Image 1 (cartoon, rainbow, N blue to C red):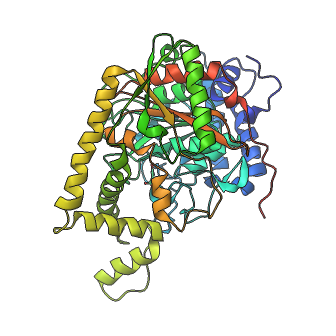
Image 2: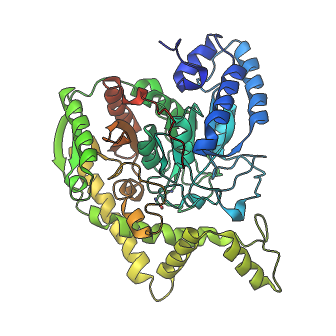
Image 3: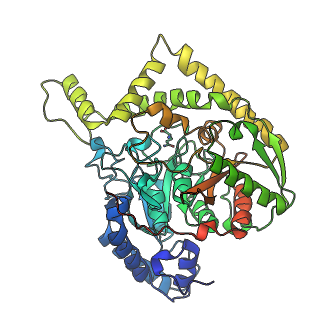
Amino acid sequence: MKTEGKKLYQLSLHEASSRLQDREISSVELVSSVLDRIEEVDHLIHGFITVDAEGALDQARQADRRLADSGANSPLLGIPMAIKDNICTRGVKTTCASKILGNFIPPYEATVIRRLREQGAVIIGKTNLDEFAMGASTETSHFGCTRNPWDLSRVAGGSSGGSAASVAADAAISSLGSDTGGSIRQPASFCGVVGLKPTYGRVSRFGLVAYASSLDQIGPITKDVTDCALMLEAISGYDPLDSTSVNKPAPVAHKSLINDVRGIKIGLPVEYFQTGVDREVEERVRQAISLLQELGAEVEEVSLPHTEYAVATYYILATAEASSNLARYDGVKYGFREKNFSHLVELYENTRQGGFGSEVKRRIMLGTYALSAGYYDAYYLKAQKVRTLIKRDFEEAFQKVDCLATPTSPIPAFGIGEKIDDPLQMYLLDIYTISANLAGVPAISLPCGFSSQGMPIGLQILAGHFQEDKILQVAYTFEQNTDYHKQRPKITNVPT
Ligand code: GLN
């Protein structure tokens, strides 16, 4: 492996891991290098809400002790990782980028974090997001927006913008995000890194702060597909603490990382290449698909006829679930409490009025409306039925093809402030990512080129339930035959 010329913080997870296992470097050295890098670039990017330097160095020392003991070690041992700040970390603040959880220190660990720690991963900090993961640009964070490392005047995407930007800026070796309607894949595509939303049920959500529980999934954001497979293997599996997690063996990384797509059938959903997609995005994605075809994949057009209803369906169901999930923030048990009140109802009202930002309030109102007695049948119930139709579209498509290939986002990263005042325009940008959540199927975004302005473009690959191995095989083959994943931003143009 050619890693000699690289600074430690520039290593991928698998590169760093092999150097750690060979004792060429220590975890303390690696973690220190990443912490220095955070110091150097995070004031420009603002990927982190919390950096736990002391805790990270402690964990790194422990990892070095484990490395010194002989025996089989996890590839994650000693690797510094950044965690989206809606995943609970015991003893480390978990804010959801909201004022209402601004002082919340979880007394327990999310299952994914417990798994990472058992395997010796080092948690270096918590990353920025749209408040409660509601958004597509990380602009709704109470703690300020994350900037795109490729162009600091643009958004990093969202809601896992901090996780994607940190990995792209080499301020974390890898990270975890959450994806309810695209929040792993879209920021990964905007920042030129790899992001995977696993099948619903593949990864435990115990300890993930709930946004829309029938859609939420946790998944990795990484520098390449190999790292993605290693992270997925590490966090997957049944968890008695999450009744929606499924008892299926985790996909084994080294078995899915096959550089061969001969005979694999890839479907292009015609609805995903119609009006609305940026010309350069479409060109890069079509070029990527041609390359896969040259490498032996069989490509054919398929139809997902209910795609045009996906945005409306998602924004009814997600907001309905959110309005219910966010009812718990009342200022009584934990989190922010408004001091000014004269009776209990006023305590609730003032706390929620002052504690939530405007996008979160909009969604609570929309969701409460859709669930209210007079409108339930017209909105919520109808949306559930359309969800079933969308799911069936995928089932039918996957009878013909193994995978689907689409753009991840219709446009590359846009300017900060450009769309934040027009929620509908922002919601419409989710068009290519939300159907995977509605259907529960896995999907990856990986870099497939750049716009003429130098912004990364993402290729999305989807497969049927629990077929992450197929996705990884196609993604790995593409990556082995291109070098987009090796490009890194210069982080130069200081914002004005
Ligand atoms: N942009 C979508 C939303 O605002 C998706 C967010 C997510 O996946 N958490 O709901």
